[in-house]
Amino acid sequence: MLPRGKRGKQVKVAEDDAKVQEAAFADLMRNLRYNLQLDFSQLATLNAQEKVYQNEISSAQNLVAAIQKSFDAGNTSMKDLIRLKALLFGLQNDMVENHRQVNDLQTELKTLLQTKETAFVYPLINDKPVETVTLDIPGLIEQAKKKQARLPVKSIPVKFGHT
Image: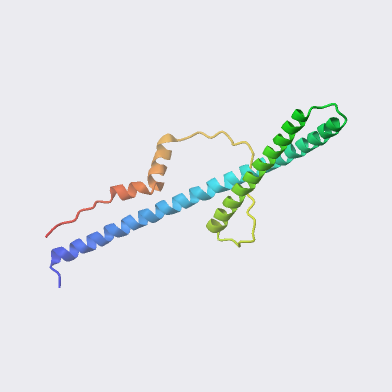
């Protein structure tokens, strides 16, 4: 049996611990939501870059083929042909690196979204221009304070009495 004061302190410590855990959970959810949004936008950017790489590689392959014919006819130097082939090789390497990054993001997104391993996540980005919005700065500050998970942790009083 505990004295009255000790039982009250234990209840208060348990309540404070619950508040800290709740704030930590809110912080975790906020971070996961941020990571999900960031991964979606990065994946959309990498998908757009892949299209650019495909166009560049196609153009470079056509150019290399034309310069190869010119070289075979004796109208172009070996140096120019090698430079263009090196450019093509560099573009192909960049595209391989792009694919590696896409695969890494796909793995992370499948984990966050709990989707099948065989599924492919393709983000659709709405590129419509944003309407002009008037901002209520004090209201936004209050909203940020309410949604900021770290602030409640700082405001929770932690008092441990030694008896």
